[in-house]
Amino acid sequence: MRRPVKRSQKKKRFFLLMLAVLLLTAPGCWRGRELNARSFVTAVAFDLPTEEGADPDEFLLSIQVPIPAKMAGEGGDQGGDGKPFVVYGTTTKMVTTGIRQLQRQLDRELFFGHTHLILFNVEVAKAIGVDRLLDYFKRDYRVQRRARIAVIDGEAREILKLEPPISQTPAAYIENLLSGQSASGINYISDFGRFLVEQGDVGFDPVLPRVSKGKETALTGGGAVIKNGKFVGWLENNETRALNILLNQKIVSIYEVKCPLHPQEEIVVRTTGFGSRYRLNNQNGRTVMQIRVGGQFETVEFTDQHGPLATIQDDLEKTVSAAVRAEIEQVIQKAQELGADILGVGRRLQALKHDLWQAMDWEREFPAFPIEVEVDMEWTMTVRRFGG
Image 1: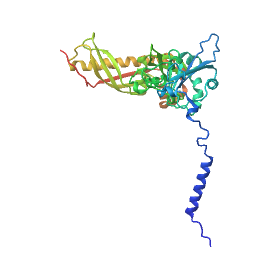
Image 2 (image 1 turned 135 degrees about the vertical axis):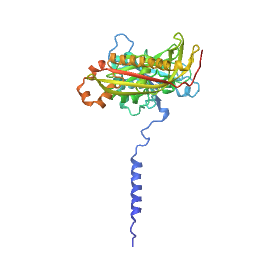
Image 3 (image 1 turned 180 degrees about the vertical axis):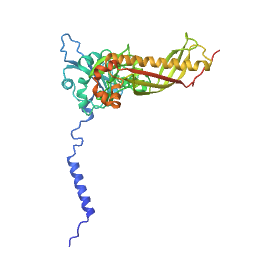
Image 4 (image 1 turned 60 degrees about the vertical axis):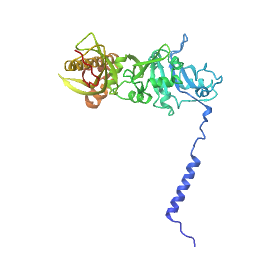
């Protein structure tokens, strides 16, 4: 007599059968490529063509590809003029077409899964637009959203050719400069993913970091304002620092201010702990955005004797607060002159007073929208020196 199969055994057989089916139908790595069959693109750059009579819809697409043997310290003649990387370029109207044209120069498949730097020359960002050129990379799931993107005040292709003083490739060098480890409040820290989020946020216009080519190195600091996908203007270093404060980026920075007791002398202070709060108020029948900024600072360096402490404290706090407020008012004025809401005022207006937001033409009304700023900086007095 045949014994009945237990229920637990039936479940086990069913599970094993389904596992076998999954293993047989899973694609695995069969469609993958061996590492030595790929060329890893570490950086991409966009410029306008330099030839006379070039098509206004065309752009110059450049890519940076490391040379594995030279990256590993091995010798050998593999091109690149002794550099551990090589830069290829082509003129095209579409990124996809340009990649196919570049592929014809290489015996390995171009792979963008390790691309961590995308650069735009300011003229191509103004004429064709950042959004238009990023469309291909938005759709390629392999492109990391942590990739750094920046607008170049000069030729983007030349940045890819730099020989960095420490890093092995320009891509790694620029990526480090544009990261938080640069410890500079004048840099706007962003990446591909953040840009996509900010661009899709109603009532907010994104900013990208600014990079320029120095004599032998790259220079960072400042920002590029992007509106409707295109470049519309620069933010200077102090304006970018003020924007970071308004957006609560938790920066640490240095200010030089006049001594309250000795105006001919200067005091260097280190600011930290910034926090910004936005509030909508009605004043005389109109809606006003009030921004209150707080923070701390410590004295770092003096050019002469300063003191006594009881006399200088209140005045120094007012002096530092005034310096921070002046920069913030400057970036607010710049944003309204450009008609680009990089401050996120519209975003807050939409959230707090949605009925008013719907009745407004924000593109037209933002340049004249009233914004007031109050700054209160506290001296932590961690470094002191007293004079007579």
